Image (spheres, rainbow, N blue to C red):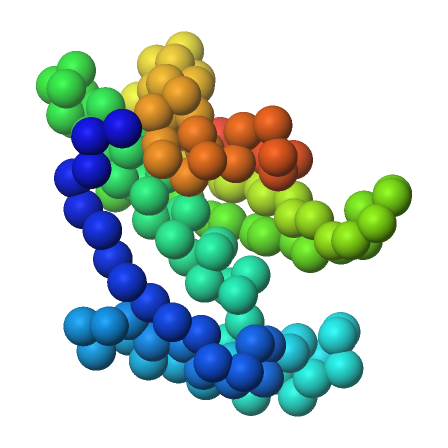
Length: 139
């Protein structure tokens, strides 16, 4: 892989600690969700992952649309990231992405979303490891 960009971040204290980027642009307190015995006063790794995946997938769609000179309305991707127990041992993630692509037809939207699944860095990183469902919810 030819590296284009590298960010650096650190976590202290796990799910009950803090995360921050080395450049100081992001600094957040982490807490466990209520469903995991926490107080929900901070954010959690799944929320951060959902934000990152949604933004990256939307950006990939935007890039692909610009390559094809397609004019569409504002792209919106809504991500749901679920944490659960695996059948064997440990925990895993599942992702659902709802993609809103106003202004283009179903066939074009389907093609763009499938291309995004092949090009998005998050999709490439999770393929085969994270159950992912992508749905076009508005055209």
